[in-house]
Image 1 (spheres, rainbow, N blue to C red):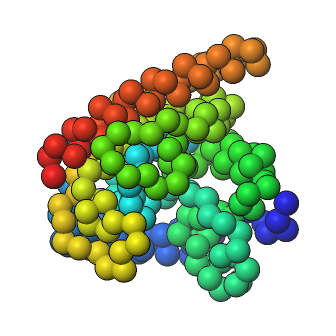
Image 2 (cartoon, rainbow, N blue to C red):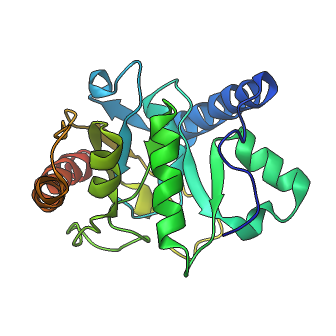
Length: 223
């Protein structure tokens, strides 16, 4: 496990102020350049932890996700980016926290659960890495497992048009319209046995997949 502290990373007043400033810049840019519009913002909890689970077609999806709520969202990143103390502090201020990629899946799960149990919202892409095409790919159970273990609702998000605004490998952001559709929160079972939780994780993954496809279709049709 990396020896980088994550639990309290980015929790100072200065860090939270930095996030607010960065978010304002991102929101302003995406609205002007990508004409980002958001539908279903009322489904995002105004307090308490939750897991935001967008489809993933572009590197823009992370900053675009920050547009759905004024609350600070946490996201994970490879710990190599925290090797530089200054850059790592910036990432932490912007809501990031490091995990060791490749051999530390358990570490990543534990840190995600800890973030949620600490009362903060978290962004996870249940498809994993960026995908291509109009079909939502099979989901990893990690997202629903984390939500069940932490006892937090899952908020599904469809993002349409981000792949045209900045496709994989692109060096520039193109002025393409992006549409975000947020779905109703999916509640998870609380206080069940480990066996029941495992079954719930599988069922929630299937339900989440269907909802993400619905939202992605809606978002894509309106761009």
